[in-house]
Structure formats: C-alpha cells, structure tokens
Length: 133
Image (cartoon, rainbow, N blue to C red; front, side):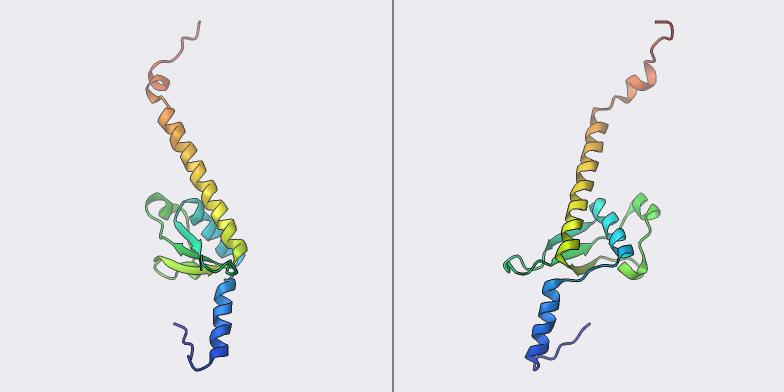
C-alpha cells in the first residue's frame, strides 16, 4: 500500500492529480481486460462522477468461472496469483474503449441467446425432407 504523508500538501495534490488522470494498461494487459469486458466480467464507472474535469474510470475485474476460466488465460501481471477481483484506475481513452467492448459483448451474447430461444431442435433432427420431392 502506498503511503502519503499528510504534512506535504503539494505531494498530496500531485498524487490526487495522478488519480484524476488515470493510468494506461499496456497492450497485452489491455487485451486481457478487453476479453473480460466482452464476457461481462468487469464493472466500469467514472472515478468521480461529480467532478466534470475527472475523466478517469474505475475498473473492477471479476474472476472467470466455468468453461471461460479453462480456456481464457489471464496473466499474473494483471491479477496476481491466484486471480481475485481487483480494482484499477484507467485513463479516459481506455475506459471508454472498454465500455464499448463491454457493450458489444453484451449485444452479441443477447443476439445468440435470442437465436437459441427461436431455434427448433426437434424439427431439424427428426423431420428430414425426402430426397425425391
């Protein structure tokens, strides 16, 4: 945990300014977080919704479960060992990109679920058209 001396007001202001700007993830880590976002395993919110100048995002990562956990590999750099939920502060650009990826993933999964809801398995398996007609 980072320690900030309260007697040094300038240092405290500098630290707060850093948090307001957020931090960029490198390409490899961003891609891994984007996969989690597409699966809906993140929570994004503005860092300070009341401050119009603060464009940073608060990112909460949730661990993968089930089949996704077996297939998708997440680096220790992102989540430590073992993978537990984590919170990061992202800059505006990456936060907005992750929000779009999250939305795309939700829309794609909703379309797949709707198609599954409409699919008729029985007819496809048991009523085959005759070849001569």
